[in-house]
Structures are given as C-alpha cells and as structure tokens.
Image (cartoon, rainbow, N blue to C red; front, side, top):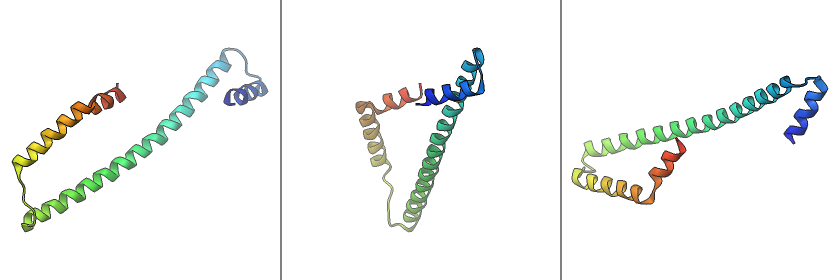
Length: 102
C-alpha cells in the first residue's frame, strides 16, 4: 500500500532514476526513526515509573527498619539472591535478554 502511494507521488512529482531510490530510502529512514522514537518514549516512561516505584519501596523499607517494625537478615537475603540468580540461569532469561542487545 505504501509502495503504491509512494510510486504515485514520485510519478506525480516527475522524479526519476537514482533520485527516486534516494527519496524512497530517505522516507523509509524517516518513518523508521519516527517509530523508533515512539518506542523509545515508551521505554523511558516505563523506566521512570520503575525508578520511582523502587525509590518509594526503598524509602518505606528504610523507615520500617529504623522504626524497628522490620528486621534485616543479611544471610537470608543472600540465600534468596543466589536462588533468584540460579533460577534466571536455568530459565535462560539472561540469554534471551542478551540476544535483544546483540
């Protein structure tokens, strides 16, 4: 559909040869850049939301620790962290995420 529209527009403007290819290439790059920027905005928004939520959780936990409502068991935290890392390794999530960036 886009090709037909572009072909008609180019024909109407009277552009021929290498200029046509260059024009279509530049329009394609512009459309791709627009889509990439829209996706980037969504990622930035999600990242800022996650950052805010993590800050709130950290502040709440700090207040609870200071007030003595909650306690911190370092050894248990290390065990949970090791267990989580092992689960990530077994599930292959890290490999999939690494493939996204390569």
